[in-house]
Length: 372
Ligand SMILES: *Cc1c(COP(=O)(O)O)cnc(C)c1O
Image 1 (cartoon, rainbow, N blue to C red):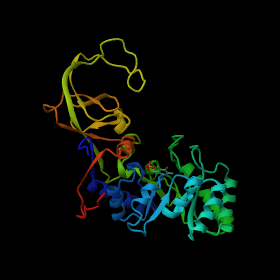
Image 2 (cartoon, helix red, strand yellow):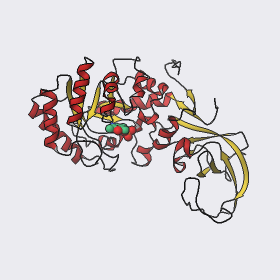
Image 3 (cartoon, rainbow, N blue to C red):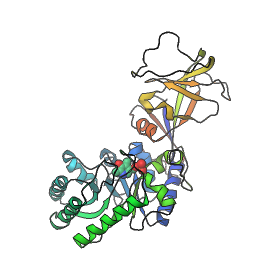
């Protein structure tokens, strides 16, 4: 097994983030569903989330529930990628609740739940402009809600929801949240039943909560990034949640070459390892290093942030990361380790690799024996 590159998972920061987000949500009358897909459901991280008092955990990939299926079974599991027909048996077996946007899927889900002698909870999705999943036609959503309540014996309609800021990059605003609240009202009037959850969105809904603009009726958010990286929210959205810390995951890699080299390639420039034609700035001869980690491990080198001042990532290929260390504060040598902070996209790639070593650090409750 490789020792490096490795991920350092800081459970203290993760647990602190869960508490901070839970506090923020409590103040706003919101139930948080903690979304574990961003770190590929790494068991140590998921168990920490569950230990910290999460009422609902959520993911888009059912295998991530499989790995914790016997751990704290009273915590609700929510499938947040609208389920495929082919995965309905696993959806009913491993999840208690699903987001759904097709009446055909509702019918098949009802049948499957009946087969497994279970009642499966359903949140119907409304597309409010992001153009990913959800009913676009509000009347169709209301008909699906009526079908669920009146005709689907093995399903329970527990709410409606929406997702924004993923495909269409649409911002969560008071207006689109009010529209969701109105749909909820219409569904409640049509069915004659109160909905338990009005699920307003993901991490990108948090700026509106902190600004005090979230309509009262919105009472659930599905939150991953704000807890797992807490970087995108702050750096892209310029919004930070009190008490939330960064670097839940840090990437650490080993230096395999250190040399003074030109900064502009010598010879005719065609294209790089992935077929792109990059641009190079000629800064003369600089001291540079290669770290044994690459795009295959983290996706986008531009998003990596070395934790030491004076080190800059200047490029990468599949398994090599080129660093400018000319202004580094220490004398970096072969065999040294360099650490990088990561954005959400980096974390998704890095935690998904089976050959990535993992080092688990810190634990306030002293129960660090999660085992893998
Ligand atoms: C991924 C996802 C989330 C969580 O998104 P974050 O940005 O990590 O908070 C919530 N809801 C749905 C439907 C998702 O697919």
